[in-house]
Every structure is written in C-alpha cells, then in structure tokens.
Length: 463
Image 1 (cartoon, rainbow, N blue to C red):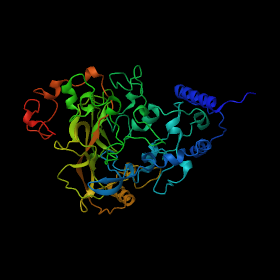
Image 2 (image 1 turned 180 degrees about the horizontal axis):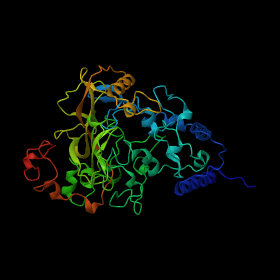
Image 3 (image 1 turned 90 degrees about the vertical axis):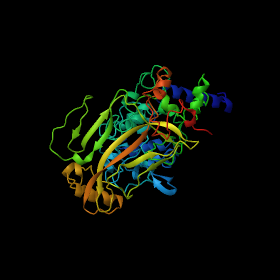
C-alpha cells in the first residue's frame, strides 16, 4: 500500500473539513451509548475535543461574570450581577434563569464552575432541532431528548442554536431585545438583509466570529465596559456610500441608525412592565397584537410592534445600576444606559429600544430589591407561589448578600437596549427628510443640539 504524503494528507483533511462545514452536521456515529445525562454526553465530546470545555469555561457565556470598569471603578459584572426591569435578577431565581446557561445544573450558588462535565456542548452544536432544555430545570435537557442521537449529529452552530436562548430572553419570544426573535430563524430580506434565508443567509457566527469558544459581542446591559464590539465597518469599511455627504455622516451617526429604521417588525416586543400591580385578582385583557396586558404573577405590560427606535449618543461604554446602589424613588432610575455626548469624538448616535418598569425597592435602605420570584414545588418563599413580597424580598436579598428592612414600595426604572439586528435592505434605509424634515424622528435638543445641524451649520460637531 502506497504511503500517503503529509502534504496529501493535509489536503484530504482540509477538503474533509470544508465538506463538513457545508454539510452542517459532522459524522459522529462512532459515539457509543447509552448517554443518560447531559454530563455523560459532554464527557463523550471531551474524549476528542479535550480543550473545548476549558476554553468555554474562560468565557462570559459560562461564568455570566467578567472583570469590568464602570464609572472608573473595577467591578465584577455580568448576567449574574445585572439588575433588569423584567424578572429583575438571576440570584435566587437560578433554576428558571439558568435554563439558558451553557451548562448543566446551576440551581443555586453551590454550582461548581470548575466541573468540565457541566459544560453543555449540545445546546450550541445540535443540528437535529430536537435538543431542548427544560424551562425551569437549571439548564438540564428535557427527559425525552435522545442525547445519543443529538451527540451523533452535532455540527457548527446555527442561528437556531443561538436563538434558542437569545430570541427568548425574558421568558418569551421577542420579550427583551426587540431586534432578536424567532422571526430571525428564517427571515425574509425585509426582516434582516444579512440573515435573509433566500439571500445572504448569514449565521450568527458570520459576524460573531469565534475563537476557542470565545464569542465577541456582549450585550450592553450585562457588559457595560464595551469590549469585543461587533462593527459594521469590519465588513463594509468606512466609506461605503457613493455620495460623500452620506460618508460624512459616519463620523457622528452609527450605521444602525439609518439602516434599522424599525425593530420588532413581525413579533411584538415588551415595552413596559409594572410589578406594583401584581398579585391582584383582576381580568387581564389582550392588546391589539394579542399580547396580555396583565398577568397576576407579573403585573401590567405594554407591547409594541414595528417600533421606531429611540436615539442617543454612545461611545462604546455604558453605565449600569449596581446592587445596593441608593436611589431616589421620585425619579426614574436608569438600570442601563449608554455613555456618550455630542462633544466626544468617538461617540455616535445609535438606535435603542427603551423598556420602562416599576419595581420593588427597600424604603429604608433606599435601594432596589432582588426578589425571589421563581419557586419549585413546595417553595414557600417565591413570589409566584405565595404572592408575598416580604417573603420573596427576604429570600432574594439573602441570595444577593444585601439587607432587607422589611419595608418596600415600587419605583420607576428605565433600560436602554442597543439595536443591532433586523438590518433593512438599503432601499429601505432612512432618507434625508426622515431625520432632517420638519417632522423628523431625531430629537435634536435631547441629542445636545440647539437645532437641526443640517439647517444651520453652527450646530454641527466639528473636529
């Protein structure tokens, strides 16, 4: 038998890898069963992919925490330590929230982040569409998932893998982000020109190019420091327009501002959540989109569809509310907000989704409470089990390591969610008058101008 040269072997392997990439799923039929649990499946993966778990465990997808500097102070910040005005906090609610963790069994603070077998390989690499995590199972797969079948049919990640969590944040389709929802599974060109399944057909990884399982592009809400940004100019360059006046705009206006005229194009997104009305026996109505306006466990909601974004200066970093930070309940507290102003040369005008809330705070300690809302069978502390705010606040604040005085009320909050997806075809990009017309969408005063800079050049920002 003729010996295969190293060069020929390299070519064969390269062509094989290219074929695997096109085919989607790689042949893993050699994996032996049975596989009776997620950790067993992971151990099978690690027999060949020895460093995969180690790499994943270095990322924020695993730790939900990272070193950051906010307002000049070094802190630990991530999903585990972020407060929002949806279900408020991960802490004490882990079994529900960690159904979207890339791991198995994070049900409380005792979770072992050093156990490689707890890394969930299948959730990102399933190609069968049959892999499902239970919604309250702390990241464990559903009992009826055929783990061996899934493990034998893994491949490159798809938008369905990423979307299984990122499309459904906040407990439902399109609830949180507004520009990420199930319509992005197989979108038309009008919904997203990049992920259009009849056109460019990008996967998430087409832009979020990944090295050693480290995925760039953190959400501003959980990673205010602003590292690992994904930018349009990475592919398109700086001077992309045939008109010079449009290219001049890129000094002060983000690409997304003109090229994402609206979000939540097909599926409504939540725009407000009032916890102060929860627990009442009143009949909830449906809005024009068929969405609930009241749920006893959660309070009142509002929803929106085909929404025009709000606009603000953003320099790549953000501010965020920290656990235990004092508030003024007579004012609206921003839980996440972009940093930047007109005078900063690295700041640009970006589009945002605004979500407002009304949530529980401690009237003596004057800070927001992280309530325990989710509870399993027999739980006597969770608000969704007993509708008792004192018990829920006591348990939740214990998990957060903060004092609870026993007295509470509700205060208004606001969050900014940066809009990056649902890029429209270039023919649908904003025209001049949509910003600079008599009824343009930009609030010039809010952006720091005395008037429209196009109409009076003295208002323009100069270098």
